[in-house]
Length: 162
Image (cartoon, rainbow, N blue to C red; front, side):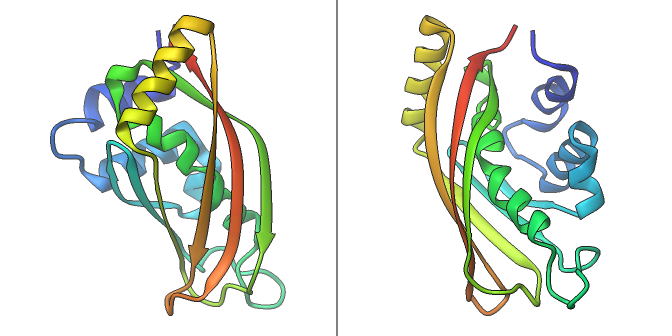
C-alpha cells in the first residue's frame, strides 16, 4: 500500500493526460514545504519532469533566491519521476544529495529531468525482487535566460509500495 500522500497521485492525478496543476497541488499536499516555496510542476510524463521554482516568495536577504529553495527544486525530480509510472508501485526516497551552486538566481528557476522509462521499470523490478533499488540522477537548474544556477547529483532508492 502506498503512503497517503502518494495514493492521491495514483488515483486522481496520474491519468492518460496529466494535468500539471493537479500534480502541483498533490505535491503541495504531500510535502507542504514545497507548497510554501511555490514549486510548480510544469509537465510530468513517464520518464520526464519539468519543474519551476519562483523567485517570489524565495528571495533572501540579498535579493536572490534562497539556496534551500534551489536545492529543493533539484531534489524533487528523483521522487516524481518514479511516481509518474503508477504501475511500478514503488516509493522513492532520497539518500544522498550533492549540490554545486553556480550562479545566483535573480529570476524564477526551471529544471528538466529524465530517466528512460525502461530504466525505471528495471529499477522497480529490482526493488520488488530485492527490497530496494538505488539510482543516481543528475540535474541542473537554469534561470529565465538559460544561465546555469546549480548542478545536483542525487542518490535515490526505490522501495516496493506496501
